[in-house]
Length: 257
Image (cartoon, rainbow, N blue to C red; front, side, top):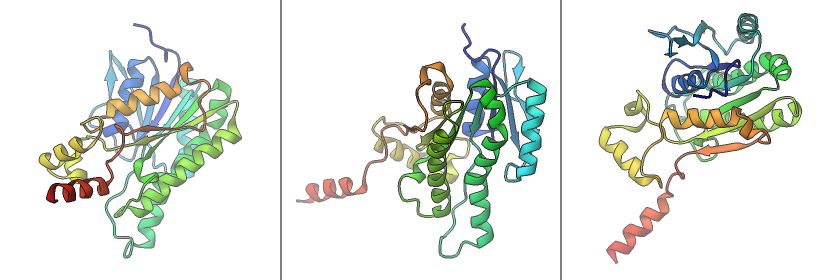
């Protein structure tokens, strides 16, 4: 099987579980050497055909730690071709009562950390003619009640994507993926019971929630020669998008008439 990533090196932040783990696995399948990071090591490394991703402990909210990690990856592998800024997230928090400390930490993880990683990797990406893929969210492009600061940070990440694409072209391409509603090992914490998830899936045009593999395939496309003229783009991977509530209200009203 042809492996387009053979001889190339990818960095994936937060690549030990969920979407990040799916991205790491897909890149390994494509032949990439993969380095990933997190604050705690996974129970077992992600491996494909005897080739495993290398894990390093790193708090990507710390720019000095990021610089050291990127330098170590470049020294170990000799190059960096792809950065996937995947680490992120937020617990539910009422915007009226969320502490300043909480908001700062969410901004650091979801906006500043991707910038730190991209900045540290830039010289290596430039030398390799590589690219950055930022994992954003539908929360960046529609209201995000309960996770307001997270949505604002992801909106900032989309803006950062377009600005870096302008500054760093033609040497480095920078793109973002707008991630929709995704099944993960913690889906119940986000979407509720299995029955609730089934109802959510039925409301989407493609009649299912997304999977980590869907995002991983989008990453692979954006990193590929097939996307050589794609930079500063926002690729929506959300199964057609969430159905507007007003349509359901209209439908219910019509049924009562």
